[in-house]
Amino acid sequence: MADDLTQLSANELLALYRSKATSPVEVTKAVLARIATLQPHFNTYRVVDTEAALAQARASEMRWQRGAPQGALDGVPVGFKDLLNVQGLPTRKGSLATSDKPQTEDSPVAARLRESGAVLLGKTQTAEFGWKGLTETKLAGVTPNAWDRQYASGGSSGGAAVSAALGLGPLQIGTDGGGSIRQPASVNGVFGFKPSYGHVAGYPAAHNGTLFHIGPITRTVTDAALLLNVIAAPDVRDWTSLPSDGRDWTANLNDGVKGLRIAYSRTLGYLKVDPGIVAIVDRAVARLTELGAIVENVDPGFANPAPILGALAAERAARLRRDIGEAGLALLDPGIRASFEKAERHTLAEVVEANQRRGELAVLMRRFHQRYDLLVTPVTSQPVPHVGSAPEAPFLSPFNLTQQPAASVPAGFDVNGLPVGLHIVGAQYNDALVLRAARAFENIQPFPALHLSSLREQAPAWELA
Image (cartoon, rainbow, N blue to C red; front, side, top):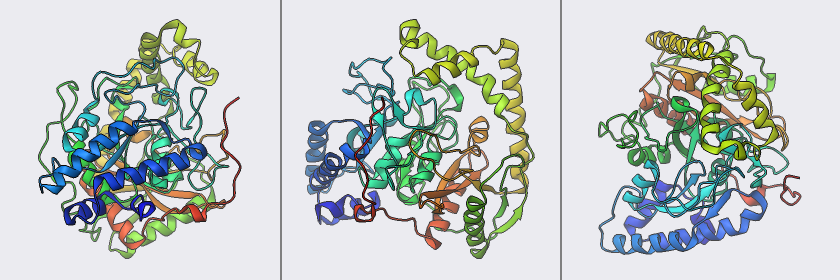
């Protein structure tokens, strides 16, 4: 029974709490025990705050016994990517260049979840400063794929995605500055959602500024919507955060896609994609057609925005240099340091031009969504690589530039038996429609459940040399 509790969704756990069939203490103990068992093999958590989590669970249990839960997620365990501050825990950001001093205040997402009565488990592993799509660092070692430890988990929210897949906390908070929620969600077979920029407040400000989105990684769409009900809120510390409109993100979640106009782009007009990936996504799109969506094969009409992202990386590099200083720079991974130095060679004029082109791209997509309700694409362009290489996911970063809502939905398995995601993109601020389409797909093709009994016999976990 204890192990079964770790396989339940947040929605299911809340129903059990209401009926008093189980308690937050039982659930938290089960999740902590599973983390302790699997951590040596999957390295998903940077730190687990066992004592604090159990204290929060006991307080939640007392509230449920009185029939007076504190908030919408009272007693539900949550993990936080280690780019986000949680009071009492250090924020290492996957880097030797950071301090192990505990944080003195919560980030907005941690504050909202603490206020709701959620159980804050700890911090999940991340790529160094979230710089690349691979959760392998000198500080923390390797976080391998949940389905096969020979393969990469992606990143930079790799620890969160693997934790969600393995039942190490039903709700996980990730961040996405260029695909860092959606790419690891795709390759680990879970649901990842990047809300429109501003819906979820962030503080302190991210190195990559307004490219940086905070959002859910879960095993079900409903859980992601429940999580948004708590974390999609403004915070005075983030002047870009949107005012709350009081919406229930679970409302109309099951309204389906019948009659929606969906554009399907296999390559965005400029990418090379593995035929096996295309075949999987073709089948997924056909399922949307079966549900009554009106699908048209069409590219959105923009050129590869990599030059824009390259120039904007200069801003990120400048912020990072300011924060860690020359001593910190010497401790960075050599690959990150090289890309950092390349970014800094961009001129101010090039950065200004890139920001202008970013705005033009956002306008193009706003016009595009006057014709189409949604855009769907693959998430990745190639099968999942072995550890040491980042999964290729070039479909994702354009929609950080435009700040649109986008999700990765489990759609099938590649030639190596690793998960493949369907990418669903909505018009800016039409997050509810992305969730609705993802839920419709989940209803017709339920997301795969990963059980330890299905894992292949594999070697022990790796450490970086």
